[in-house]
Amino acid sequence: MFVLDTNTVLDYFKGKGRVPERLLATPPSEIALPAISGYEVWVGVLGSQNPKRRREQFEAFLSAIEILPFDAEAGMRAAELRHDLERGGEAIGPLDTLIAAIALANGGVLVTRNLREFSRVPGLKTVNWHD
Image (cartoon, rainbow, N blue to C red; front, top):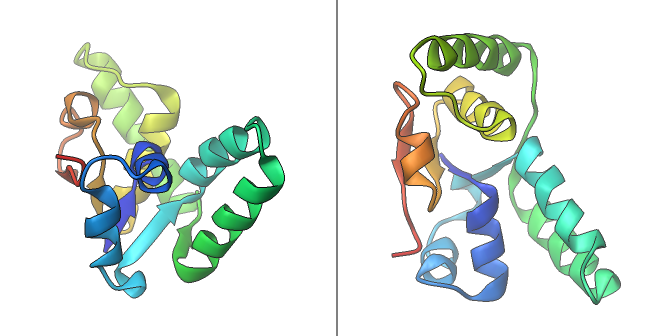
């Protein structure tokens, strides 16, 4: 399963890089979005110059893929991850910690351009569809 980071969703809607091509070549059944990334995209949708149109586009996108919740397993993984990264002086942003934990808890590959930050997460598989 490919788990989309927020920047991947934004790149898809903006037609940036190779994201649209790669996303459309992947069966929707293999695509998932962490609820946290959904939240981040919604913030952008509501603040956009055309929120009605953007809302319709994003809702259509969401209806085709799986939404991964921040559940008890992801919560435990996030706490462990934050603890370990902070102890090693390698902390990442709080929402990125939650996104990484959701991907780990679901055994997914995180699709992101933010490899610098997510590469610090032990055991997290990542891929960049932008380049």
